[in-house]
Image (cartoon, rainbow, N blue to C red; front, side):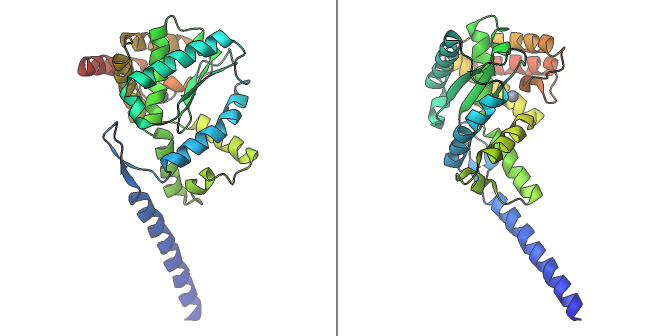
Length: 257
Ligand SMILES: [Zn+2]
């Protein structure tokens, strides 16, 4: 009787923990003003921003540090800033920062939560014009604004019942923990829908800031060519095929023009 009692007590406690996690997840529903979506995110915007800023140096380290080519850095900065300032992205109030990574072999670009955006020299030097760069950066800005990383982290928190992404962002982490987190974020796969949404947001931002969104389609060609090697870019790391993405980008151009 007593043994049975204690194991059912354990069950009750386990059930309370699960219910608490679920309630916490669903009570975190928030409206995203720019995408118009309802999202379940346990990180606040400030926590996202802190997490991104604190993780940025580790992220740079993973890719051979920042590029020493100042003209690359200036170009990426000016295109990134123009997109943010002249599009609805400005309303997000995220402190976007744009970095060129020294890595000249890995064709990649990615965003950390809350604003830091990176592009490798390998990808940058393959791009043929400023509009294509705007396409890459617009897509990454889309990931930040749609809060895809934070959303993924919130889902993981729910499923794994881990301590809570919230405490990770409060600054009690050491650099080893940031390194691990960055590792997770590099390997984090956005869903197919997230990638397509970022493409669409990218198109919208490009149009609003005066770039030619058709060049984002050519970026797909460049990525496809580059992925002949073993390095799969974030840009096409997940499910949508380049053909599918091209078709959706065409649709988005017509929709937002
Ligand atoms: Zn992406």
